[in-house]
Amino acid sequence: MRKKDKNDLTGLTALVTGGAGGIGLEFAKVLASYGCKLILLDISKERLQDALGSLKSDYGTVHLSLNLDLTSDSFISQIDEFCSKNSIFPDILINNAGIFSFKPIPDTETRKIETFIDLHVRAVTLLSQWFVSKRKPLGSGYMLNMSSMSCWMPMPGLAMYSSTKSYIRVFSRALHYEMKEYGVGVTVACPGGIATDLFGLPKKWQKFAVSIGVLQTPEKFARKAVKKMMRKKKQYINGWLNRFSIFFVGILPTSVRMMVKHHLLDKGITR
Image 1 (spheres, helix red, strand yellow):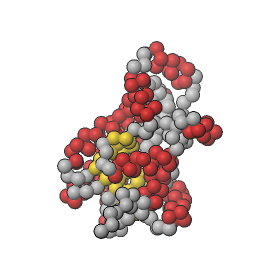
Image 2: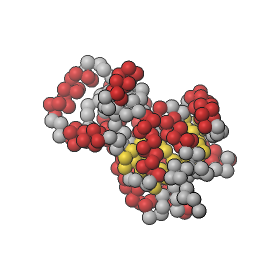
Image 3: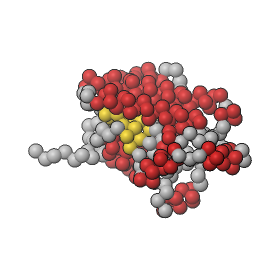
Image 4: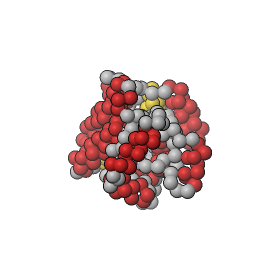
C-alpha cells in the first residue's frame, strides 16, 4: 500500500477563527492546498465572502463560513449548532482571532481591555475546551493556538497584548500535556516578526524587513506552523532571531524599557 503523503489532509475539516484575513486566511490557504475542508469564522461578513470566493477560485473547493463575534455570550452554542446543522465537526481547530493595541493602560478604553480578555482568554479557553472535549473520546485531533513573541516581553504599551498572549501560551502548554495521552495534539505558536498590517507597519517597510530577514511572510509562517501542528509539537517559534530575542529582551534593564515609554508612548505613537 502506498504511504499517504504527510501533507495530504483530504477528509479532514478545520475550523479557523479570524479566518477571513491576515494570518488566519493564510492558514486557510495552506490547509486548502493540502485538501482540507474549511469552516472559516470571522466577525466580518464581507471579508468572509471575499475569502470564500478566493479559496474556491484557487483550490476549486466550496468551504463553509460562519459570521460570528467571539466576544458574544453565546458564541460556543452558535458554533456547536452550526456544526450540528451541517453534520460536521472539525478535526483541526486554529484559534487565530485576536486584536492588537499599543497604548498605556490608563489611556486604553475599558471596552478595549474587555475585548482583549474576551478574545485572547475567554474565547480561546472555551473554544479549546469545546474542541478537546469532543475529540478526546475519538482519540484524535489537532489544535493550534496563536500566542506571540510578546508573551515574553513585558514592555510599556503592551500590557494587555503581552499578558493575554502569555496566558494563551501557558494555557496551551498545560493543555498539551493533558491531552497528549488521548491522541489530541495541542500546539501553541509564538510568532515574532511577521509581515502583516496588525502592527501598523507600512507595506514598503514590511517588504524591506522581509528582504533583509527581519520579518517573515505570513505564507511561510502559516505553512511551517501547520506542519508543526500536524506533528503535534507543543510549541513553535519562527526563526532563530526570534528565539534569541527571548533571552535578549528578558535581560533588558529598566532604563531601556523606560526609553520605549518616553520615546514611543509619551510621544503619542499609539494605536
